[in-house]
Length: 370
Image 1 (tube, one colour):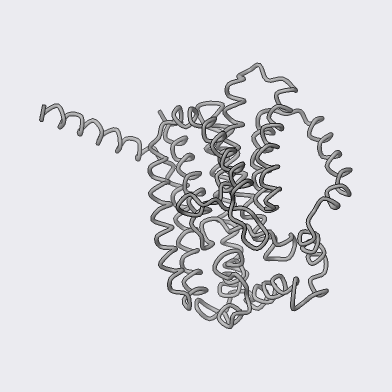
Image 2 (cartoon, rainbow, N blue to C red):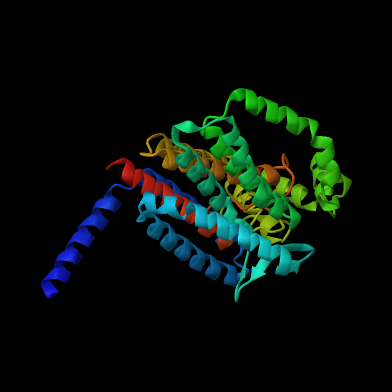
């Protein structure tokens, strides 16, 4: 019996080493660079909040552990849990709508002993579900399959909009639409849907909440309310602009350290980075994010199955959307919607989801080399 356990241990060890050796090293290096840059910036932005630094260390450790654990899971197992994850996520959203915790007028959290935000789960559960659906359909995909996929996407998005949470609903929608697009939807349908969206903008405007319309008006002219709704954008722009070419230096950002930048450890951490490291640092950071997205699409291109290709492509879109929306809102070209900067912003749930996304990419890259 002892020899049998030793033999199984040796086989497990060899399998583990073999799988780790097949991981995409470039993807790991890019993520490590972003996490390091994020922690350095957060240390500067939040040194007066030492508990946030300690919490972020814990968040990074938990996300890294989740990433490594998921990277060891065979993709066929991830395929099998796609439908259950989607169903559980929708049930949690329903429970949130019925007995959720309301904070500042938004019912986004569910108390299950600890407070969770089910909508965060749907950022990954929705593309997993749609990738699974198209994988099950195989080569028999027809035009009505795309409408069925849209219906599956619309269910969780409707729940999230009801909370209300415009930022998360946009991220979930884009992640789901990316799977539908990669599944081979015709360009005629894409153009038709785009035209329908443009024509429905007046209706969407009337359905939006007052604070959402105010955000858009503030985006167009933040000086309309410089001490109120426009304060966030104006202070972020001042911080980024004051960084100049090479920045003021680490721990030397005056806008951040004098408390002019709101949410400087989370949503507006890019403003702190831009002030301290300047145009050069910001350009290098954006280039690193572009490398992350490009590497995700590279892994998707060489994925061994249709499910893996669709899911990896959607994860690449998730990385891009997070980055574009965050930097866009901090730079004043998009409304402020509360989207974190991937691997840099303070927070546990978003970092955990991103870690799981990275673990899935590592699992796909390992199996593509079998």
